[in-house]
Image (cartoon, rainbow, N blue to C red; front, side, top):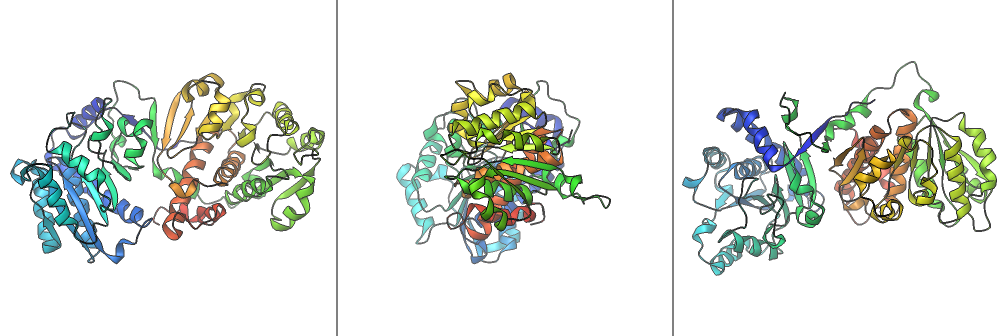
Length: 526
């Protein structure tokens, strides 16, 4: 099986125990890691700000600074951003006087002042602004005419006690209502989200949350997704140590470095058969584009050979448009779907292939579902299923479900799971379940791996068809590891979406333009 870099998701108590063991009271090591975290946050901000406005054009940053290490991370990130771009300025708004701050934060503030000089100004501590009116007046004066390019929340960490007290409670409410704070970034986790019991009104809303070193379980709560925003895992190498958790974590997170597996040079002594043969069953007269998108994605994913079974009325046009694939015309129903009559031709192909992908664009035609079901009954290899292939009556009869990769969105999962949770469904069926969403979760082998990547540019028709093709192509190249194919496919798809977003924005793009960035997505130096 493919060994992928996967780290545990920790609870608050586990995180505290881990950090105590990791640092062992070594203050200098803590300072080094704080600088490493701050630099990683700055680098990620440069990338993610590009989704909205190029930071090279300048602007102002608002840095919200607590008393502890989250505040230090935020200050170091601000210093790095200012040193890298002379058009940026920063305004620090601390919670308390500097004399009440932890030593590493004081050190970070002193070094930042020396490094950037008057390009960083400071507001009076929120605790000295008086009542809510005083906080509002301070904020209005700081906003000026144009507001801020971005705001960084470095106020509270995982040791904060809830509920929030004055003035922090009023401060959070004021900041949540202000539209001119720009893109909102949270360090580690948003202020107010520290445990299992939270009040949503007391959470400082973020557009991006950067989990530096450890992904802490509260940020993954589905009921807080709107306040957490996009999640990014910034791997600081913590889990390369020998620390052993007392309790095994069932939730894990995939490192971004996982894509390095796909960067390996292809062997010299190889040919097209060395990289797998995928059979894709997809499309109908009404949903022809889904088959083409899935096929193009499989080819871009590097599969050696691709055979696509489509309704015969689509054959001539598709073969001309993408000649790299072998397009097989199959009998179609009066409604334009794949007819069960084509099973004989499909079965004749099964001995040559390494993996199967099915579902994109097949529609609701019962004959098409029967064809997929019968094909899965005669093929013993791995298969990626999506869209209308994800029906309970079809899946219930599939032998050896552990070879399946299922890629539903929330609505499709509700239809196929018949009341079961994702965890119980994956455990009962033994299949690999990639539950698509803002943060896609892959359930397999009694574990849930969170893939913290992607963006809203992927939330458009055709995106799922592309993912099916990518996973199918990876399955054909390495048929023995459906879980790895699912994880790598999701991560690759998400990373390409991030680059598409950076270069072309969120709105005016085609879903298929993501294919142009799959190659670039494997370049970790992008």
